[in-house]
Every structure is written in structure tokens, then in C-alpha cells.
Amino acid sequence: MPLLSIEPPLLNSANPWCSTREDLEALYLCPNTGAVTTRTSLLHGFPHDDSIHQHAFFSTQSQTSTTAPDYTISGKEYPASLNTLGYSPTPLDTYLTWIEQIVTASPNAKPKPFVVSVTGSPQHVAECYTRVAALAARLHIPLAVEVNLSCPNIANKPPPAYSGDALKEYLDALKDIPRTVPLGLKTPPYTYAGQFKTLIDTLRGAGTQIDFLTATNTLGSCLVLGNEGARQYQPLLPSAAGTGIGGLAGEPLHPLALGNVATLRQMLNEHAGLHDIDIIG
Image 1 (cartoon, rainbow, N blue to C red):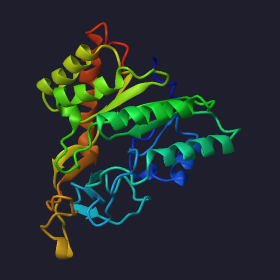
Image 2: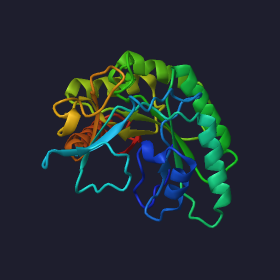
Image 3: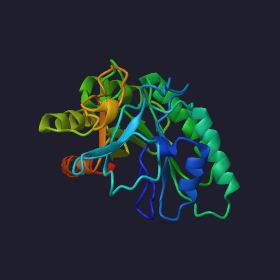
């Protein structure tokens, strides 16, 4: 089924600034967004730990950084970010309740879609889809499900979207569920041709199940060192593995992300069963 109409063509990604009801309401009422994405959630929430799941902003040009949780930091001052975050500690059902409350409480607001970002085991993701579809049947705004298979920060759980076999497990779990809302995959930044081919071959083998791709997530295996005080020459952030290695986003990632969007679009267009898949990039 076609992707939701997003006008203006701007929406947030799944990130810490769409974690709370207040975050989502502000995004829904913002005139500059054409859709709203929730932070990636699980059926029962993620075991978030403030001591290891953190984010920082930095600039490679000025060699400065900050770990202050200041959401008003200028992108010009710190155009890049690193995070060792996992997923939202808030369970999926709570997000669905908030969405219904926000839409119901804002009857005069311009209706815009919600993209509900979810993850978990293949079976849990299938249940997530069913629950989102049940809410969609009660609302006058469209919903979509984004399955996040690309977070680089989960210990001992490499992103499934890098593996054809792992990706197939999710597609198999979803294939027999009645489809009433668009279904998409959030992909990692692919860096060589074989990774793109793995995704395309897996999608072709599964038939046309996916309506859109969100490209891309952060780039894993990145490290930023502290530049002052006790953190100087030490990892800027903690992490679950104790290495400070996390996911890179912002200005340094943009050329790779754009290359992913362009390459995926070209490769999807080459196959009759895939050319209708949209890309959020």
C-alpha cells in the first residue's frame, strides 16, 4: 500500500526528542512537520540506564563537544552527534495511548500521520503491528509502522538489517498478518555494494511486503574522545560495553545517508516487485 501523504515533506526521526507525550504533541502541532515519528519502542519497554545510555554533540572543526542534555544547542555550533542510546523505556501501548489522546485533544489541528517506530523479536514486532493497526481503525488520521532493525548500540545484538537471514525472520513473522497500515523498515547506513544487494535480494525473496524504507539510522562503531578535564583523551560517552563506541549522526553522516537513499532508490526501481517501495530519507 502507498506510504502516507507527508506535507510538508518533513518529519522527525525516531530519537530522544520524541520520547514523551509532550514531545509528540509539540511535533504534531508544529506547522513545519508533515508527519510525526515516535521514538522506537518495544512491547514492554527498553531497560534504559542513564549511566550508560547517553548522547553528546560535537564539532570536528572546532574540536569541541558537550554532553549537556540541552535540547536547544545550536546545530551550527555542534553539527554532529554521537549516542550510546538504546530504545525508549516507554512501552508501545503507552505511545499508542498518547497518540490517541493527542489526536482527540486537537480536533482543529491539521491532521498528519504518525509513524510508530517499533522493534523487538520477530514475534513481538508482529504483535506491535497488530496493535498499531487496531488503533488506526479508531482514528481519523493515518498511521504507519516502522520496524527499526538498525540500532548499532545493542550489546550482542547486531542490527538485523545487515543480515539477510536475520531480516528474513522478521519478514516471515509479518507476512501472514492482515495488512491495514503501511509497513516499513528502518535501515542502517550501508557502506558497500554487497550490503545493498543483501537487502534487495531478501526483499525480493519475501515478495512485496514492505511499503517504505527509512534511510538511515546512525553509523555504528564510532568514537569521540573528550577534549577537556578528566575526559580528555578518554571516550566522551559511556556505553554498555565500556568502550564509549556508539552511533554517529548529523553533518558527518549526511553524505553517506544521501548515498544510501540514492542507491536504494536506483536498486528498488530495477525490480518490478520493489519499485513501489517509498523511501523516507
